[in-house]
Each structure stands twice: as structure tokens, then as C-alpha cells.
Amino acid sequence: MTSHRFLQILTASVIALQGSAAQTSPHVSLSVGDAVALVLSRNPALVESGHDIDASRARADQSRSGYLPSAEAEATYVLLAPVSVFDLPGESIKVFPYNNYDGHIGVRQTIYDFQKTSAQVGLADSRIALAEDSREAVKRDLAVRAAETFYVILFLRRSIEVQNEQVQTLQEHLAIARRKTEAGTATQLDELTTQVRVAAAQNVKIGLENNLRSAEITLRRLAVLPSDAPLDLRGEFSPAVFPLDRDSLKKAALTGRIEARSADDALASARAQQRAAGANDAPSLNASLLYGVKNGYIPNLDVLRGNIVGVVDLRIPIFDGNRTRSMEEEATATLHAAESRKQGVALMIQAEVDQALSELTAAGERVSVSETNINQADLAVKNARLRYNAGSLSNLDLLDAETAVAQARLTNLQALYDVVTGTIRLRRATGSPVTGG
Image (cartoon, rainbow, N blue to C red; front, side):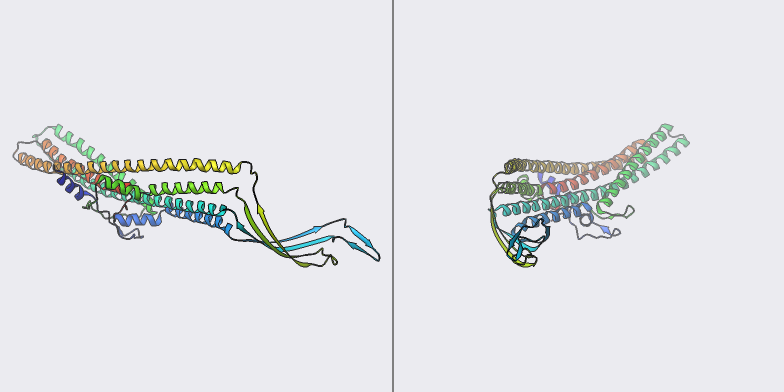
């Protein structure tokens, strides 16, 4: 087979993963794009990841509060006794009152903290990016699983159709074998052999039906549908073109995969953590302004009077119990781990592209082989029927030929399904949209 012929077969077998907007009703006919969009609009895992992003943004807002002033109101009461008294001619003067009242509103603002707050903000922002990467990974994986489950259901339904035809054919041969046995023109062995084949085909059908029920349960769970919701799925193993150049696929994967972006964001976060750790023991220059009322002013100690207090303070950490040093060591280790992770992710992505492309290529080859087998099996069964009608071929021999046709059809269907799932996995490996585009 020429490479041109192989590419024709491969691209003619790759599924066109084109979807339209999601339909939220469980009673509508769903394409693969509809099913994926339905899962992405309803699955709790995606909702949970959205809340994680909200939490990360809230933490970033908390770190930005360092840029803003803080204000608070405070009221105190203090009972002091005994009270010192100065005895002067004609009167006694108390130094302070028994009952001391103080109420004030204060505003505090950091004037400059040597980039400590900005480092914390940068770290918090980098963690938002990581949370968003995590959500994109969840979204991608849900889309892949929804698409794969969609085609598992289609594959099993069509396999069951082929198996039903096979069971019906076997039952027809069983009826013929029984008539011949009763007429004495065939041995009971023919009838027993056909019965065994009928039972085996029915067992295969039962297994397929059980697998179908499991796949339908999975799709309903992914889309948060009722357990009895009908799944009216439409889809074909129709042609589509997907570029198969290995180098271009790897290049696209290294820029398009969410794991690659996440590794870059993790590296940026580790660097931000290192900057934040280094700024932990930086000095800070602060200003405070308080206004309030209190008593205790001479000469009327019990009268509440307004007062203003202004403070500028410089805080220089001297020793923090080696906390900053430990934070810097942790940040450095995290940075080295992020650098190693980025290298590992690049190797993983390239290996996954190689593997997905290899599986897709093999599936395409199986499609071509299975199509040839179908043609040969069809010719064989035609010749077998001619010989059977002429009386030169037994019922079991004809049954073998017809069974080979059914098996060839199932093998072809499996190969087409493998091309579909192989295309989905290649799209995932390269960071392309699962449903095309």
C-alpha cells in the first residue's frame, strides 16, 4: 500500500469532531460537540475549579490591602487608684482622674516597605494563573472523557447491531440444521455445533450490552443527567483532515498544552515566592494619624477633650528566629523543583505526541486491512452460498463464511473507533480543541 493511499484511508476515517452549541435538554439529539458542551456546562468539577479561582483572586486582593490605609476605632476605660494629689494653699489638685476615658479613630498607612507588599502581590497573582491553569486542565480532561464516552456508546450500539445480525443468522442456520437432522440428511452434530455458536454469539451480545449500559451511565454522570434520561446521540465516523507531521505536532504541543503553560506559571510563581521570601525582613516606614476624645487634661481632669496624635515610625527587623532564612531556603527548593518539572513536562508532552501519533497510524493501517478483509469475506460468502445451493458445501461451512463476514465488519468498526479515539488523544496530546477547530 502506498503512503498516499494510506493517508487517504486514514484521513477518510478520522472523525470530524465538529460540535455546535450545547443543548441543556436531556431529550434532544446530541452531536459530540453538544455532548462535550453539555458536560462542560454542568459538571461539578468545573464549577469547583471556578471557585478555586475565585479564592485565589480573593487572596490576591488580600495581599493588595497592604497598599491601602487601615482605619480602626477604639474606646477604653481605665480605673486608676490611688490618685496622686498635690496640696496647694486653698485646694488640692489631682494629677489624674480616677475614671479615665479614651475614644479615638486612627488611620495607618505604610509609606514604603521596600517592595515587600509588591512581592506578596506578585506571588498571589502567580497563584491565580496556576488556579486558572488547573481549571483549563479540568475542562480539557472533561471534554476528552465526554468525547471518548460519546464514541464508546456509538461504537457499542453499532457493534450490538452487527452482533444482532450475527445471532439472527446463526438462529436461521440452527433452524435449517434441525430440519435436516429431522429429515436424516444431516447429523445431530451440525445442530449441536450451531447451538454452541448461537450461545457464544448471545454471550458476546450480553457483554456488549453491559458495556453499553456502563458507558451510558458514565456519560449521564459527566453531564449530570437523570439516570433515566434518554441519550439520543448522533455521529458518524466521517472524514476530516488532521495534520500528521510529527515535528509540527510536537512544536504545537509544547506551546499549546496546558501542562506546558502550567509549568511556566509554576516557575513564575516559584520566582515570585523567592522574591517574597527575600523581602520578608525588609524595613517598613509607616505613618499614623489618630483623632479622639479623652479626659485627664489639667485643670479639669474629668472633662473630655478632643486630641490629635500623628506618628511616623520606621521598623527595621533585626532577628526573626531565622524565619526569613527558612522561607528563602524553601523558595529556592521550590524554584529548583519547578525548573525540573518544566523539563519533565516537555519530555512527557513529546512522548505523548509520539505515542498518540503511533496509535493513530496503527489504527489507520488496521482500517485499510479490515476493509480488505470485508471485501474478501463478502466474496467468500458469495461463493459459499453458490456452492451451498449447488449441494457441494455443508451448512456449517456456509456458516463459517457468514461468521467471517460479521467478524470482519466488527474488526473494521473497531479500527474506525480506534481512529476516532486516536484522533481525540492526538488532539489532547497537542493541546488542540477536542471537538475540532
